[in-house]
Structure formats: C-alpha cells, structure tokens
Image (cartoon, rainbow, N blue to C red; front, side):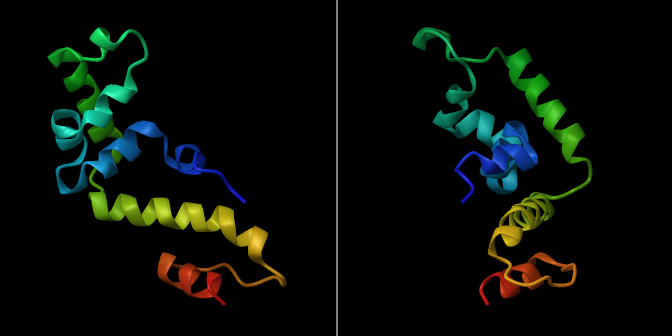
Length: 109
C-alpha cells in the first residue's frame, strides 16, 4: 500500500499547502495555518517567514496552479492518487478510466 507521503509525490508540498488553504488557497494557508511553520527547518525562533518569502511562495504556487481552481486541483490530485492505487487493486485489466468519479466507482468494486 502507498504511504502517507504519496500525495507529495504526485503534486508536491507547495501545491498541497495551497489545497490545505481551502478556497483561500496558499495565501490563506500562509497567513492562518500554524502548519505553515512546518515548512521551515531549524530552531523554533526561526520558524517565521519574512513577508518577502511568503509572497515569493504565494507567487510561485499561483504560477504553478495557473488558472486552475482549488477544486480542479483537488480533482487532479485525487485522479493521480487513484491512478497510483488502482494498479495494485486490479485483478484483471480494465479500460483506461476517464474521470475521478469513474475511478472511485471502479476502485470500490
């Protein structure tokens, strides 16, 4: 079975932090989540980003996300994770699935 780090492999940490911010995305995550301090290693008193570093992270994530909404990125992440999980669950070869909803339906069969 795939581990808890699998989502990092399919999307990377910064886009996952963007998704964790909900509808406010990475900006909300960076401003309101105590977990944003987990992005920095080092002594506890250095677990703060300067405003410039926060903005650089926000800008980079927004560039990577492009015009895709948080909901669209969530669906993409789910589809990629299902693609990783399905081969391990298949007993027989199935045709390529087209949507995350189809994948979830077939995964539970």
